[in-house]
Length: 64
Image (cartoon, rainbow, N blue to C red; front, side, top):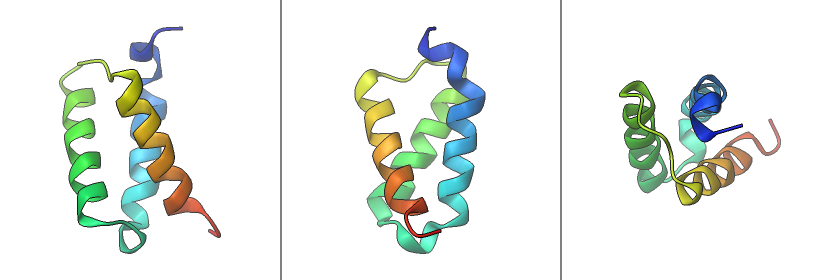
């Protein structure tokens, strides 16, 4: 499955992170905004961007 097929899932991860913005750094918030813009513009994420998004989501959702 290509990265483009995961757009809805990535947007869901970003929304989860946005709900927990208090747990994120300003860099994380800026990164999420730029990745969200890419997805909305139908541009694929790079493997590094996906890895970073996963890491931010893990930190943001840790312990609820």
